[in-house]
Picture (spheres, rainbow, N blue to C red):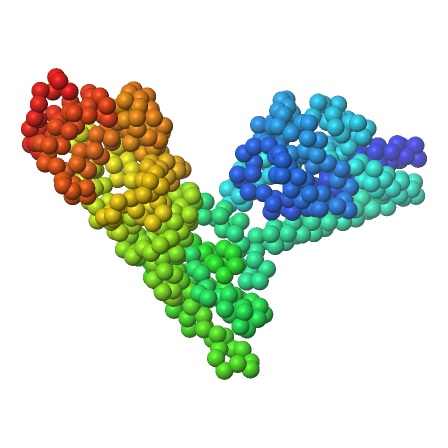
Length: 595
């Protein structure tokens, strides 16, 4: 009997520890999973770049409190993987870094950590004032489900120990009573409890998956929504870049959809959106990815698809949408559905996710401009006839554009101004010849070539396009034109791969004597490539027909010499004239030593 009792006591003690551990972990993980699934839907990767302050802290706090309302969660923190507190209800520790946090390090590797904390560490100072101890869990945050094993940040969730310990103690008392009656019954109850816990965990996993699907899916159409689309496209552009693949993107917008809602009601409008979503199931391939981008806009990602294939598929979608039959009772004229499509292709039209979206969105703008119910491929915008405000709309679509769509914008501007087009072309040729003479590093040569092509892109945003007209400009118009270097630099700011390119565009109207603009830089303060571009731009403008009478090459060289040391770097004038002489464009007209 004693041996049986001792055996039962040892077994019961070990079983109690196992049950306590499993129940605490299951309870904590269930709370953490629910909180994480709901809060993740509020976050984007860029939100994790810096601590939450101001309105960002307030908005996230309200969201956390809403998500955890009615639970035993006492506090939620958000950590970066390198130990910085990004968010906490205790604002005094936001932005601080805490080292030697082994639990945080373990969670940063992808494994949740659960323990009952004594709140003795520095980062627990706020909680220690109100609680003796809390159930503490570190839960890894992964915002991009498509990237296996990546942890973007870590939640630290504090849960009240009281309800879980009461539940655990109640269970253990029941088990102890049962063990006193019969050891075998205790074993049976333990097995039963284990099965119940597994079922509960399975149910929690199902609920978590359901919440994740709900957060990623548009409730009306059943398509993916904006957030998972962005994540998927980011992944696909990375894959396409790594394996030298092509990637197509289509943005579709229902034409005059507001009219459908106004005339037939939002119920019919919802019916239209559902039917449109059904077209994607019929037309797209299994590998293609469709999402509702917002309102009446949809996007389609086409992996391993070139420009021709993307345009062809966009046409099939457009035709299928036009063929849709929407039956509305009691009206003689049924609604007719058409769509405009903007198409762009990686890598020819863009070299990253944001730029690809900007290119397709710009193409969509001009599909609508051309009359709607049509497909427009991004490079075709250079063939468009621009009207008042069109270029402003296009530029507003390129806040994160890379160089390919910006170069297409230059072509679009040039299509409206033959001088701009010819001027940029001639500057590129001059830059290539001058590069040889200057013997610059290859990355400087490349930057100068691009700057020669896009340096006047800022003219696109000048109201009224004052350039190229014959009548005299007003003082305000002249002042507006003078701002085109700043406007151009702002357009290419996110696309410029080097500071040299950006500074060449911004400062190509600075004068050697400090009388230029926009910053009045003087001498060697002016970036080197900006000084080179200043010479090239001035010479090409002098010999062109833009400001008649055009100068002969000899006259232009003479004027360069005259202004060397005031407007131009005198050393560059010497080398540039030698370059012209060696290319047989024109012999120098004066002794170079006097420049």
